[in-house]
Image (cartoon, rainbow, N blue to C red; front, side, top):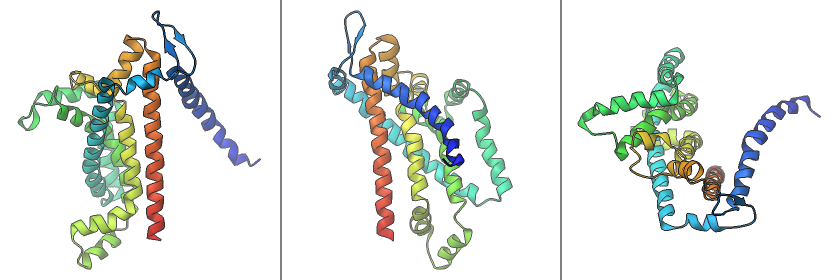
Length: 266
């Protein structure tokens, strides 16, 4: 056996112990039934999955999908120009600005969020942000922005300036440079970045509760309620199982779509 393959053993053990095993337990619990005493009876029951399609619960899923989609699109619209600007700077200067971007994330997540809420209470641009949907999007943009800027910067940095200059010399407008030059070269990193901020946003809990005041119910609040308040593990586990299934389908679909586009391009 190649000794280099032994290096994958720690990662495989970590993946098995912290991801596969817990999710297997959740998957088993999703098919269980809860009695009046709160005890679980394991078996192959689909009551929890059927219950999720109740209009009340299904509305929570749709609201969460809308929030996560808008958040991911907004994050990309902000992160892409920022990453492009940083990628055109000398590396030392770009590293300085990237460090400034990351400095707030050296603090605790909750402290950082509470500090940002103090900024929102000052009503920037004369707009009320707290307990508003756009306030939730602003807080999520602030907290997820580095996760979008860093991979996009890494991708855009590899685009030679000479390619962009050549396109401009040939008469390409800024829009054409973006759509005909930059986008084909960074399509895969953009898709990966979208999923990187979209999937965690589906289970976001603190921001909707603190910034949004819990006025609208999202999936994170739903899971907290089912596991910690109602002790309804089958229903909460079924929701998590569907969430993981959705994430897997998105990864498979995006990978297949990008592969087909590359085949058509060649």
